[in-house]
Length: 192
Image (spheres, rainbow, N blue to C red):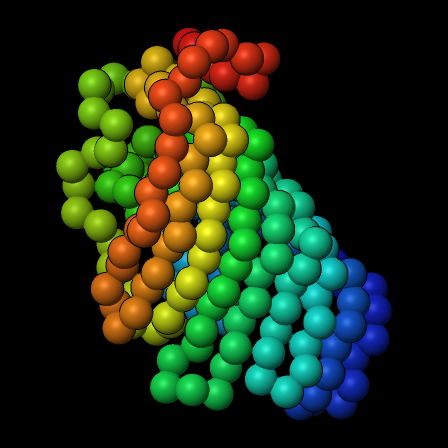
């Protein structure tokens, strides 16, 4: 679902755009036909923010929302016109559930609908299924993520994760990948 309120110059060519935009759907992967960007399969999402389009740049700024049980906020930008689209983002999550990334981290599709408080049935932090990288060559990306608290802290006893994701020529790197061990329970931790 898409809701928008603002101005568009040249509706057929979308020359320029400045509006408030709300998006929701079953998975971010469903945006591929619309944007040509390979987002991972995720749980249901909802987000709202300010979108600005000019020339070859689309910028979704000061947005906030949820992906599954995780909150997400920040600024996201796509630049077109080159060999591949370039995606840039600066994202923050106060409460992050790694399962919301779904098949990107190897989670089986039948586990995607599990409730956020379900107890994991494996001792592994990341499942051992292969990554779904078939569309990675559609985009280059530079994205920073700061995840302050993790859900399911028994399995993933981390907090204050800071990383920079770089995707160039279908090669994904996370550098740096900094985090702290979970020191004490907080109201946002889910220890079930």
